[in-house]
Amino acid sequence: MEEILRKLCKENVLTSIFMNNDDVSKFTVGYIEQVFEDGIIISVVDTGGRSDGYALLNMSLIYLLEYKNNYLKGIQDLLDYHKNPIIPLSFIHDEDESLIVNFLNFCMVNDLYISIKHLNGFEIFGLIYSVNEEILTLKTYDHNNNIEDGMTALSINDIEGVYVLNTEQKKVQLMQQNR
Image (cartoon, rainbow, N blue to C red):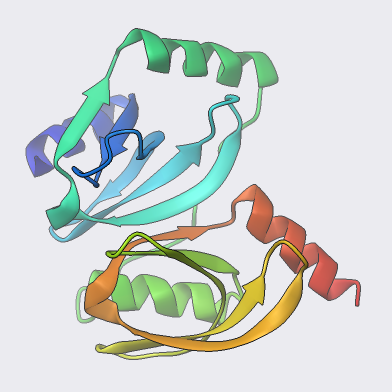
């Protein structure tokens, strides 16, 4: 899979990435920005053809890729129509640290709101309070009401993906800054 992902990255091909074989209706669409041994970073594109942040996805959970199909051609047409540029993410992986911990530290240092997709199917939204090789602790937010909603700690090993700089996250960040 890594070889195909590297090729799609090099050719800048819009790709659907499937990680939940129990529900094939759940997948992430985007351009593969960086490929690592244990994960990938993609610039996410929503179904309306707009840039919607970035995601770090666990390589070992990717089981299916689709590209150059009619669905993705339609999204590409919408992306071209909106002329919504994808701004590169300035993340550089430090090989001395695990990819996910390195990425989470990048998000924490830059005060980025994140969404964590847990292996059990639920999502956690918030700001990183602390992170180490085993545990991620978040100050969580109810993104429907834009209010703090306590703290959550979870195992790094239970993370399917980390999503950052999407529309919802930007909205909550803006609301928090204006309080």
